[in-house]
Length: 283
Ligand code: SAM
Image (tube, rainbow, N blue to C red):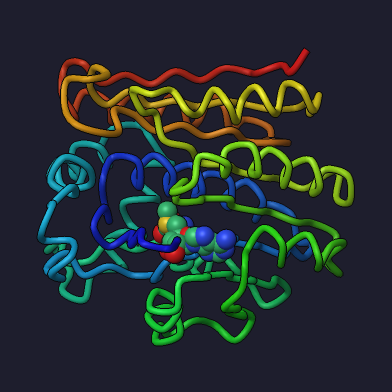
């Protein structure tokens, strides 16, 4: 079953949370010269025009990136270098500067981060989504595979570069994906102990993400930082009420930097929005 298409949700609050965190992670990793392999196990299309039929249908970006874009001048003036840098990148993604018409997906953010010595591996299983991804202009170090991402990644471990950074961003169409994602992290940790791994999960009234967290706890994986954005009260609207991330081996300082940036953004999404970040132990 592969029915999910990210274009329906592009630029929503979860995308902002996830891609701001991804950008923060890559900024930290780029401080050292040693080569990095980036792997995006669930890549999606790469770039989303907001006027596309799918994105226009739900217009989730209106409650996600749009208020952030509208407040960008004030946010940049604030002493918030991560946000200023992220907004500069978002501006770069716009064909006409000054107008928000496109929202960049994870392959775009990672492509922007890679240097000559780095590699980027993108997996996308949905045939239509993969065709969109194939049509994106990406740097020569980027390779795209029409393949199961978690399996494809584990098969390719260990990677030839000294450092590895992985984004696992499933659509969770199947409930089993929560436990499978924990298993993927366990397999990565076994073969690449120092890998920086970011797992995204939705906060849903049904609380399915507890299955993922419980599976991580059972596996005993340590060095985890958890970042959660509650956008509105659970059950206030239909569907996802928040966005969660678990980061294994977070670069030093990521916790305070991302928390500070998210505290600046949360009020833009309404009085009920709030971010929490905490070191998370599996014991
Ligand atoms: N990471 C993207 C971003 O941030 O722009 C969004 C990804 S979207 C949440 C999940 C994507 O994973 C969908 O495009 C879906 O087709 C794809 N997908 C689902 N199962 C997959 C699998 N087993 N391997 C690779 N891709 C998969």
